[in-house]
Image 1 (spheres, helix red, strand yellow):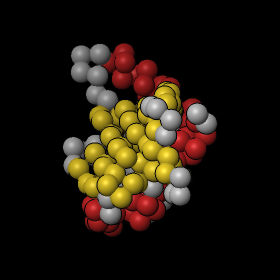
Image 2 (image 1 turned 90 degrees about the vertical axis):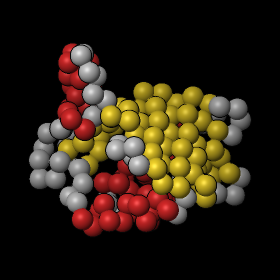
Image 3 (image 1 turned 90 degrees about the horizontal axis):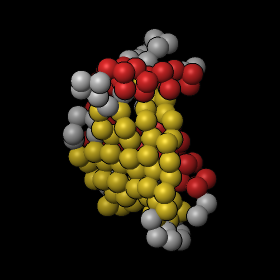
Length: 146
């Protein structure tokens, strides 16, 4: 499997978030694709854009930085991508460790549409009781902050 298509899909997802573009973000999903947010909210298909629209218009969202940990094929036309992420609040130049997360993306290759997201899950990485893991997570991402 060529990992570059899945990696590119993920980069475009983060770019759409960082650009605060709900339509670009939602366009990367399969028609029945699901997004599970950091707060546990769930949105499906074009409902993803409707879910994000007020978030982007009413809140100054932080920008993602990410480190892909791995991409694993699932059969011939699907893949699982796992990454760690951090967020840089607007107007700042450092990560906010309280927003560190693990992201999981399941994508499928459509012969006509290319790679599309079936599931995107953004899970907080709080590492309760293990401050050394939280510090390591942040430290791994710090060189990626521009």
